Length: 427
Image (cartoon, rainbow, N blue to C red):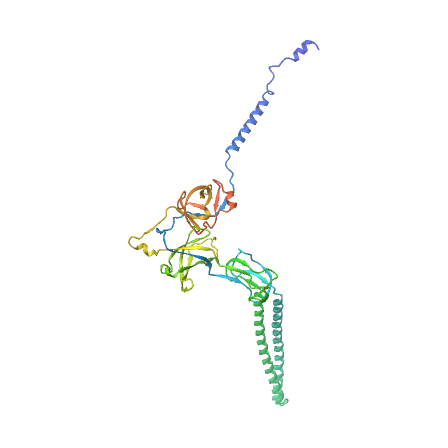
C-alpha cells in the first residue's frame, strides 16, 4: 500500500451521520431523569398509614364542689378491716387432691378452689344408682305378678259362680292380689327412699369440690395437695382446717376507737377523710357508717365504723390509717360559716399522669392523634387528681399507661379509642 492510501484512511468523513456520538448523551439524560423522580418520591412521598394503636381514655372534668374549710373536729387512728372475709373449708374430712388458687388471685362466687379425694363417694354414688335401678325392676316384676293374679281371680270367680270352685279358693286369690298390690306400694316407696339417698350421695360428691362462697381476693393459702383437711381442728396438728382465706375488697372499711370524752363530735353520715399511713399525701373521701352502741370500759373508747366513698387497689385489709372527722356540713349554712367552692383546674385519673424530670405530663388524644402535654398538678384524692394548668375540661387523656404502652407512645401517633372509652370511674 502506498503512502497516499494510508493518508486517505486517516481522513475524517464529515458528511457521515453523527448518531454514534449522541447515544451516550441520551442514556445520561434518561438516567438523570429517573434518579430525579426517585429522589422526589423518596423525600416527598405521602406518609405510610400505620395501624392505629388502641388506648383507653378518660375525659378531663370539672372538680366537684367541696367545703372551703379543711379543718377537722376530731382526729383518730385505726385500721382497715373487711366486713366480708372467710376462711373457706370443706364440710367433711378429706384428703386434698388439688388446690387451684394462689395468694393474690381474684376469684368469683362459686369458683372451684380445691378438690378432695372423691373415690369413695363415687363408689357409693354408683351403689345408690344400682339400688334405684333394682327397685324399679322389682316394680316391673310385681306388675307382671299382679296381672297373673288378676287373671287367676277372674277364672276363680267364674268357677265359683258355676259352683265349680270353693269360697276358700276365691278368698285365696283375692288376698293374693291384695298382697301383690301392697308389695307394689312398698316397692314404690323404696324407690323414693333410694332416689333421696342418691341425691344425698350426689351432694356429698359435689362437696368434694370446695367453691368460693363470694367473689373476692385470696389473701392466704392454708393447704397443699396431699394434706388432710377437716372443718374442725384435729389433734396433733397434722390436719388443716381451711383451704384459703378470701376477702371481699368491696366490703373494706375503717374502724377507729374514739375516746368517749369526744364521741359527741361524731355522728352517722358525717364527712371524714381517710389517709393511709403508707400514702399520707393521698386522702380518701369517707363518711361515718355507724357508732357502735357499746363502750370499752378498760380503754374508755367507743368504736366507730367509717366507709370509703372512693377507693383504689392500694387499700388493703389491716393497713393503718388516720381519720379526720370533718365539721357538720349544716354549719356551712350558719352566718359567718365558710361556704362551698369549686376548686380550680380539671379532674383526671391518677393513672393518666406520668412524672419525670421533676415535672408531670399526660398524653392527650385529639382528632385520632396523640400528643404529650406538660401539666401542673394540684391535690390528689384517692384515684383522682386535680390538674391546675395544661388541660381543659372536655379534653381526652390516655388513662391506662402500663410499661408496654409507654414505650410505644410518641408524638403525633395515630390512635384509636377503646370501646369502653372510660377508666377510673371518670367518663
